[in-house]
Length: 124
Image (spheres, rainbow, N blue to C red):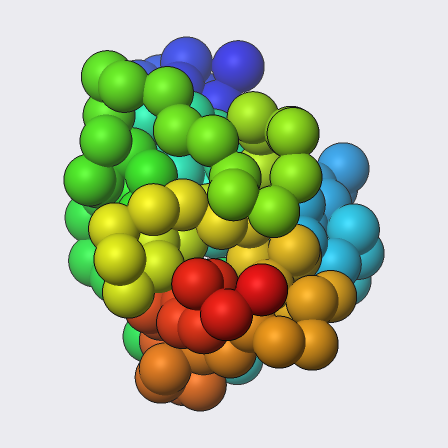
């Protein structure tokens, strides 16, 4: 539906507001001008900027880290069995959900602004 609306309007950059959008990390649909919900242009993952570590809204297309680094290969979270959700890479090139990393106290984000890489996985 959104793709069709963009084509009808004639621009891929027309802002579309999805009233039902919910962040896949915090499960909240509220957003502000400084913390919008972004959608991955490949997998349609919805995340708040702050929840996923995207301090600036990119121009053009935006891809989540999983689609950027592993677009055709499925990834697994090393902390849980779920294969869906918002992933980030670890410092040893494995994958972890951002939500799992927030809940496991032994795990940390090397860069607290960009929320990556996730480190201390090997210490669990």
